[in-house]
Amino acid sequence: MQEQIIYGRNAVTEALRAGKAVDTVFVQRGAGGLGKLIALAKEAGAVVKDAAPDKLDELAGGEKHGGVAAVMAAAQYCELEDILAESRRKGKPPFIIIADEIQDPHNLGAIIRTAEAAGADGVVIPKRRSAGLTSTVFKTSAGAASYVKVARVSNLVDAIKQLKDRGVWVYGADMDGEPFREADMTGAAALVIGSEGSGLGRLVRESCDKIVSIDMYGSINSLNASVSAAILMYEIVRVRSGER
Image 1 (cartoon, rainbow, N blue to C red):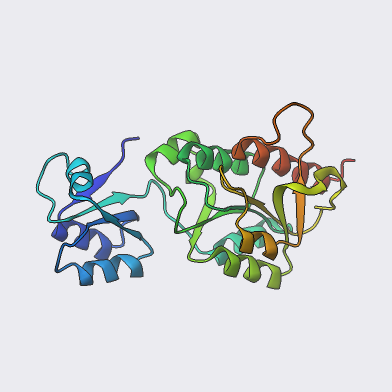
Image 2: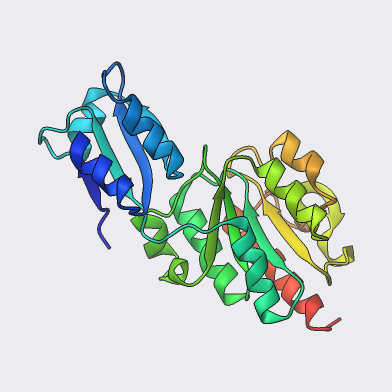
């Protein structure tokens, strides 16, 4: 799947008005007359980023762009409530994955792929400092992004609070937590995976009910984010199935 990019003020504006799945809108720094377009993009849930002129030139392939270009999402985003509704449809306690600023699209795609295979109800990502549902994420997910509900929220801490208010227990994955095999993850659970470089954000970590860690027996002290996610997702699958 090729990255779908549209450029030019009119083209981007009409795509937003038509409700197209726009992931990111790039706006040239200092360009005037884009206030209404920016407001429309934010209202549509797209991420708006300042960009240098050469970035816009690259996105537009050298064509005239009027200071704006948009990257289309490879799949539609949903609301957090849609993910909770999915668990109700299945008749099972919620099983949700939260990706805290996973910026590598290959990692996010792999997490979504495993989430689909493990039967998770959905994946939650933040609007800022995170990969979105780009074509790279879609390809890495092996198409799983077409089946897994992905909610993109403005504030992960607020989203976690909403889940906790709905009876979901939130587990954060980090190095200095309780060994994951000792944690009781049999009920309604949300698993939070931190970013590749810095792990869980401070406020996100403080919002978790429990921090769990994966035993490390070699010389390195951490695993790739998508690998950690896979191990912990399947631990949740195992304990929820009644295995010991």
